[in-house]
Structures are given as C-alpha cells and as structure tokens.
Length: 170
Image (cartoon, rainbow, N blue to C red; front, side):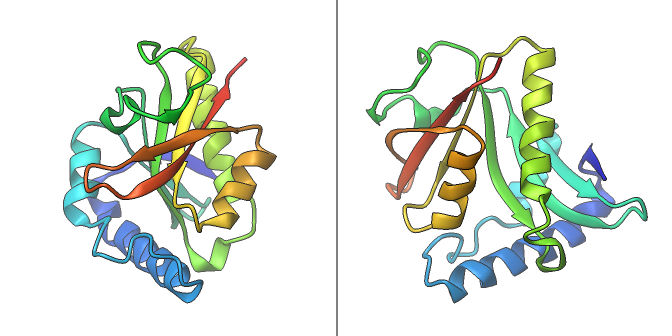
C-alpha cells in the first residue's frame, strides 16, 4: 500500500469511497456526513492545498482517502475541555477519512494514522488532533486504541458538536 497526494484522476474514486462511507454511517443511524458533505468541492480544495491523500494498492486502486494538514484548524481554537498541547503549538490534523467497503476492517485507517504520524515525526511536530461525531463509536474506539486522548468538545462552523482527541507524537 502507498499513501500518496491526490491527483485529479483520483477524484472519482475518492467520491465513490466517500459515498460508501456516507451509506455506512447512515446504516448505523449516525448523522455524520449525511448532508452532502464531504463533496467534490471539499476534496478539490484539499487537493489544491496539497492536503488530500489516497491510499492505493499495488495495483494502483484507490481504497481510502483522508485530508491531512499541519495548518491550524480554526474550529480547534475553542474547546470545552483542554488540549494536551497549547493552542499556539503546531499540530497535525486528519479530516475526511474514509475507507472503501471492500477494505474496511483490514487496518487501512491505522495505516493512514501511521503515515500521518510519521510525517509529523519527520517534521518535529509533537501532536495530532482529530475530531469525530459523538455517535461514531467505531472511530472513537480506534482513536483510543491508537493512543489518542479525549480532550473535550469542539463545534464545527455550522455548530455541529464533535468530540476532540489529541495524541502526543514522540
């Protein structure tokens, strides 16, 4: 597997993966990603800022996607709780992670986290932050398993509540 920056030719595969993830969340009655987001516009914006990534098999098939950046996340400036690092510290952020149905449960999300954390280590960045829907117990379980600590609640620009996690990278 490889973790690569998104190319324009990957967009249709990414959108299919996101549609599968939206359906998977809906099946679990989780009201996350059920309003037409993320969409092509969001993925293209991530791509233009070099923050969109795909996981590909040896055969070059896209099987997962994620947005990863070290730019400040505006919605993380206010938290009901406390981050493990100071708000002015540089940190990594993962958003819009989705894995193809055929590859769910095969460690692909862990692979994405590992790749992003390695990037942070190489750039001497000490933490990763991420948020998830309060009903997305699967993601919360993965975060705890990977050493992420619950820090509190943040609110998205549209006022949706999210649980915020952070991991110190060493």
